[in-house]
Length: 256
Image 1 (cartoon, rainbow, N blue to C red):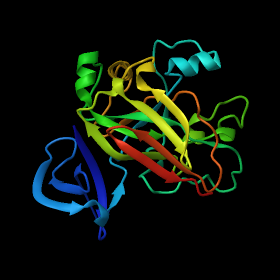
Image 2 (image 1 turned 30 degrees about the horizontal axis):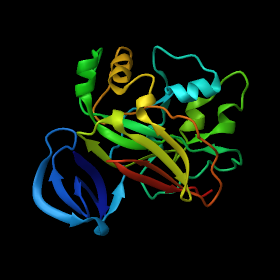
Image 3 (image 1 turned 180 degrees about the vertical axis):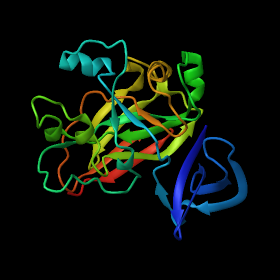
Image 4 (image 1 turned 120 degrees about the vertical axis):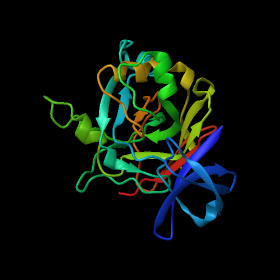
């Protein structure tokens, strides 16, 4: 397994592989053709950035059996997806902030994120699996009251695309078996979500394959696989931590 990170230091950005408290600096392109420079940095010397800057940021709804059963939803045969604003992405440690003047509920939703590593179009599941570069943590933040503000039109893009509503990170893990993992979300240290990824209705390769029938995916695109039970509103001053073993902990303060 390899952990890829992006970082900022002294006004410059870079990327590399994380090993404990050290980053092995690489040159080239993370998603293809990266080569080690032989240099390294201590983790404490840098600020970690979101490990990827997606061109397309896709989120799934109703993709876990437990959540579907609790909410009385039918089991989908095709990904029920929406698009998040890719410019809403932030890294671990950066604050989540609601839009100006909004005083409604803001939900956390801890999820597994798939990072696409190669162009994929009309792919079968084997091709789709090979196109997944690695896995990361995502917090699919949602302004719930904006979603339902107009009874005639659910505003998914607006509710989920506000600035800072797309925390991703802290790393991208390659060579990790998603099916054995769990997603946990803690608010101020208290676990609020804890669910197995094996409960996913549509698994990663099928998600990528089916979406690629309609939308060509490109390197760096991110697909958030949906969340399960336990997604709740945050209160000001809370710290929300999305953790997946092998990837790390994505921690962000909620700071209206």
